[in-house]
Image (cartoon, rainbow, N blue to C red; front, side, top):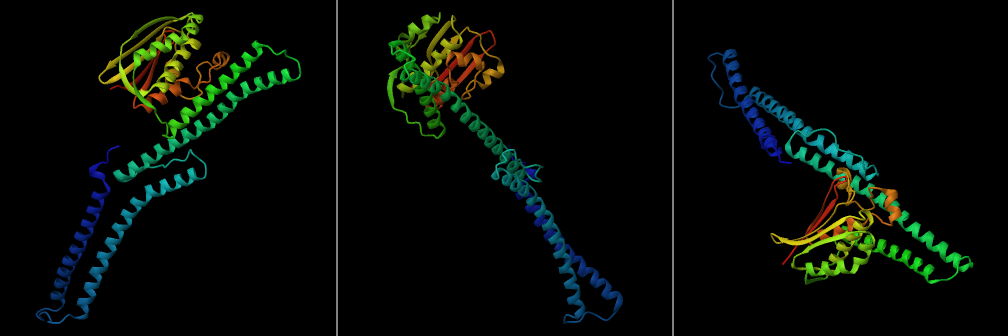
Amino acid sequence: MAISVSNSLNRQIIWSTTIVAFVALSVMFFGFLIYGWVYDWLFKNSGYPDDWAVSDFIVLGINVAIGQAIGAYVGWRLARRLVKPLTAVTEAARLIADGDFAGRATGEGNFGEADRLISDFNRMAEQLQKAEKELQYSNSAIAHELRTPLTILRGRVQGLADGIFEPSQEVFRGLIGHIDALTRIVDDLRTLSLMNAGRMELQQSRFDVGEEIGDIVDSVLPTLASAGIEIDADLQSIVVEADRARIRQAVLALLDNVTRYAPRSQLRLTSQGIEGLCVIMISDNGPGMTTTESERAFERFWRADDARTRRGGGSGLGLAVVRAIAEAHGGHATIDSRKGGGTTVVLTIPHC
């Protein structure tokens, strides 16, 4: 928000002091002119005394008093203009300090700096309110996500202890699967927490992104095939200096999303260098999302179809982790999806 030069605080102060000085000088000048005219009218042909008379001091005092009164009035008006936006911000800040994150500074300032102060404060308050809502939702979602696998684990282990279930490889594999799900949730939460705190440490090394993605695809090929996903890959050789494990984590999360939410689709996977950037693009022709859903896709724990996603085992953290990893590398992640028209996720990071 640009400050209006014609309505800035500096300009108002300069004009106010100029007006006070001009009025004071005018009062002094015209006051003595009027005093001289009245003196000549009252005391014709008497001349002016060499020494100041009492009346001279009285006139001087009146002139000074008038100038002081005008200056005080102008200063009072300017002070009101200064205090009004500060009072609004103070009252709103007090509400926020008391836990009411809906508090906002109301009204408009009378100069550019006040307008910017109110606007910036309200924007900060909106961000705080949003962060508070996200924190409350995240805490609830974390409890829910952890409760389900923990309840299942406890039930299975209790059943084994009570002899209800017979120990078998199938039972133990199921338990390991739930433990792996818990591990993924904890790892994703740790990644997001480190990113939010600005403490995500990257173990950077030079490697070929195209070659790395090819290895990732080969490792999950049986899973993709079982989901009926056909792969069309165009992976260019691009050398980057990045955290290999984090990039692998992001690509695996994107492939896992396709497996869960776009089975039996055509998967298009590309990597290319564009203007100093490594661009990784993963597209499918699955059910896609609406515009509103696309805008919220990177929010943690958010699901477009909550019931379907829970049955699929997703935590709603995958895309949030992808964006965190991209931003930690100085890049970004975007999504383009249309209902019934598939989804495209683009991961961009700088390359050497």
